[in-house]
Every structure is written in C-alpha cells, then in structure tokens.
Length: 194
Image (cartoon, rainbow, N blue to C red):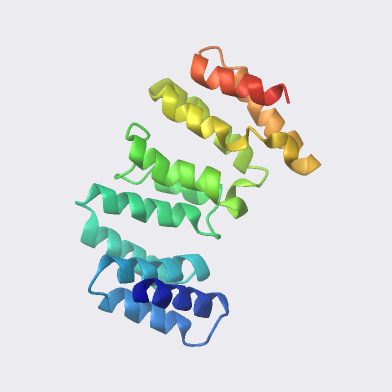
C-alpha cells in the first residue's frame, strides 16, 4: 500500500509539473530495490515528460530486463499507453527486435494497449486506419486475438460525428477484406448494423 501511495504521489507531482518531480522520478527509478518502485519511477517519467532522461531510463530498463519476456511486455505496454505516444511511435516500436505480432502477449502489450487504452493516440485521423490495419494483420495470424482487437470500436455509433465517420470507414475497410476470418467478420458485421 505504501509503494502504491508513493507512486501515485510521484505521478501527481509529475502531472502538476512540480520543479523537482523529474529529479524525484529519476532517483526513484535508479535507486529502486523492487519492480514496483522501478516501474513507478519509469511510468512517471514516460507518462508526464518527454525528456531525454525518460528515453534513457527506457533504454536502461530494456537493457536490464530484456531476457524477461513478461517484463519486456510491461515495457512495451508502458510506452503504448503514454499520452505522448502516436501511431508513428507504435510503428517504430513494432520494428524493435523484441516485438512480433506472432506473440499474443507482445501484441496485447503494444497494439492492444495503444488501440484500446491510449485515447490521445488512437483517436486521431491516422489512429483508426492503424487499428484496422492491425486487426487485418492479426486476423491472418490469430483470428481470436484479432477478434478481441476488433471489439475496440464496436460501439462506434456513440462517438462524436467526426470520429464516428472515421471509425465506420475503418470497420468497412476491415469488412471488405476477402480473407477475413469468421470471428472478425461476425464482430465487424454486428458493429456495422448498429
């Protein structure tokens, strides 16, 4: 409980742009004796500042933990959910040697986190086509995983008109694929009937 409170306090200091917050986050990251504190410091740096220190901490973290697949998944997920992350950032991370769409956990940690949880990044003119592209690519590899990702916007009719139109267009693009699996096809067809 104390660690959770400490990390929440650190994130508030970073969000409030306290003059010493970045220094505290860096100190917590590098001095941490457990993964909770290390991730708390890294999360504060990644989510609330776009600085070279944050990039260096991300590189350091990967160097330290690259042999631990579950920890690398968290590393990808943290970057995917960061408010400053864009489609271009995700595309660059998809080129990382540790990333492959063929690994369901890796796909969830990067693609799902971005498409389903990063409201700043995915709700953009390039975000919806990117989501559709990933649904189509995953459908060729693992239709069940693709079907879960396809559900990200099955409630598209509730969005504001500009987003609604773009999401509908992305859904129609997915539906137009000749080799679409029945799993994804059913979800997209139901979504478009709304």
